[in-house]
Length: 272
Image 1 (cartoon, helix red, strand yellow):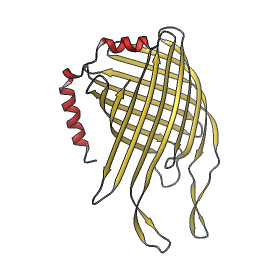
Image 2 (tube, rainbow, N blue to C red):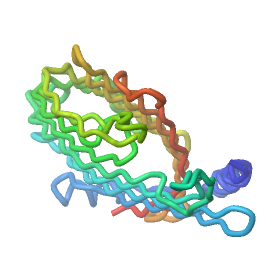
Image 3 (cartoon, rainbow, N blue to C red):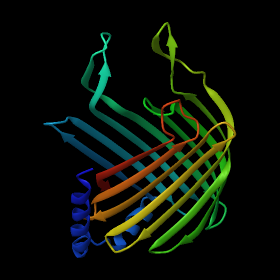
Image 4 (cartoon, rainbow, N blue to C red):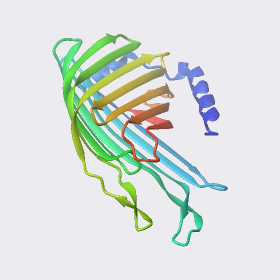
């Protein structure tokens, strides 16, 4: 986490130079002429060598559409990390190995049909695979109601809520078999859930924007919460630097693992 102060200084410098990266009304005009479509791609990579070795890679792709009839979102995310971990070999010796420590990818979409300028019916689907998470994979589909509570040039606030169905497979559980700990495959589980989504956007200046998204998928057996907060600073009309902080909570975890995970990222963003 020694890079955090540098990231803050970079963000402060970019925010102070906002006069060189202001957005223009033509951005909204371009989206309108394209059926309301817009998108962004994010990429972040960090590598260290020397006293310790680590590699971290994360990437995101998002597409949105909003016009008089539709409010749609599509996304793909990926995270992969490697680092030095301590392992015990068959002889009982402790060794340092450069191994994968995170491998996660997810994708999803929501399609909303507007009943009026503020209300819409929304169908959503999400799938996630995580080799190091509480669940090896999980998939959710839902149908619900959405409402745009506030929308102007600087601020947007919207909510979605509705019933859904979730199926997931818990991570393998380590069990003692003849004095040796071996992973045992767990059966997949399905249940009805309540899905909720809250999305807040606020433009602090012409080139600085904040966004926070809270996702809730709550069932009787498993409860999953995810909050993504991001602060982006535009360098040009197409390029931006984004600082992100993600919190993920899973109520059902294997013994010895934590229910809450956090992820901090500093990414380069391309808007299109």
